[in-house]
Length: 399
Image 1 (cartoon, helix red, strand yellow):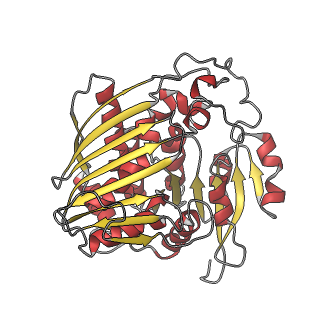
Image 2 (cartoon, rainbow, N blue to C red):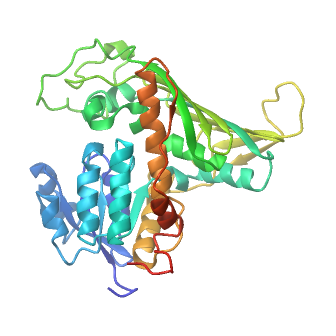
C-alpha cells in the first residue's frame, strides 16, 4: 500500500455504530470499506449498496484471513471485543475498537497484552476526545484559565435510556457489566483527560428504580419496529423491554484520581431531557458547558468571589462541525487511518480506555456491594511503558 492508495478497511459489526463505517468509506480520499462481517443476513444483503465493491461475510475470521484488508473496525457488542480484537491483532490487522474497550479490567488487559506481544497497532474509539466541547474545555484548562484543576463534576441525563439501553443486550449485565461502565466509559475518559489523571479509588451507589418491573419481550423476540425512532413517555409507559433487565437505571460514583483530583459522575436513564453537563473547578476559576454540540457554549468564571453570575466572565462557542457526534466520528476515523499508516502520537489511548473501564467496573462492583470503596488495579509496567511510547518497543523499534 502506497501513501496515495486508500486504506482498505474491514468492518466487523455493522449495527448501531454503522456511522463509523460511513465515516471510513471515503474512496479516493484515504480509506474505503472493503469488507464487512456481520451475522445478520439482512445487514449483509445491503452491503453492496452501502459500500460498492465491498464483500460481505458471516464470520469475522473470514475477514481476518483476507490479505487485502489493511485494518479493521471492531463495532460488535461489548462482550465480544476481547476475542475479536485479540484475533485481529494476532492476524496482524491493526484494530480500531469501539468503546468501551472491554467489560472487565481483565479483558482490557488481555487486549493490551495482545497488542504488546504482536506489535500490531491498537486504537480505541473514544470519540468524545474529538468533540468540540471537550477539546474547547481542555484548551481553556491547558492555558491556565482556571488555574490547577481540583475537582470535576459530571451530570448525564439520558432521556432515551429506556429505549436505547433497556430494549436490547445493553440491559444484560453479562454483556456490559453495567451502564456505569458501558454508558459512562466516555464520560469517565473525559474526566481523566480534563483532570490529567486516572481514577485510583472509587465508590458508587445505584439502583434499578424504574425499568425493573416494566413489561419485557420473550427471549429471541425481535425489538419493536421503530424502537430508535418512536419513544414512549412517561418512562413507566415503556414496553417491550429486553427479556433480561439487571443493570441499574440510576447511579452516582465518586472518584479520587492519582493526582489528587476529586471527581463525581451521575447518570439517570429516565430523565425528560438528554444532556451532558461538565463542571471543572480549579484553583483560580470554573468552567461549565451549556450544551455539547456545535454552537453551544462553555462559560468561564474566574474573577470571584461574587454571587452567581449566569453569563460568567467569558463565554466560548463550541466550534461548528459537520457529521455525527459533532464531527468527532470523522475526525477519529481520520486519526485511526493516519495511525495505521504512520504510527505516532494519538489523542485517544488504549491505556486511557483501559482506565475508564477499570473505574466503571470497580464503581459497579461498589454499588452492588453497598457503596464499598475499591482501588483500581494498576496496569503492568511494561504495558504502560509500551503504550506511553506510542506502541514502540524500548529502543525505538515497532515490531
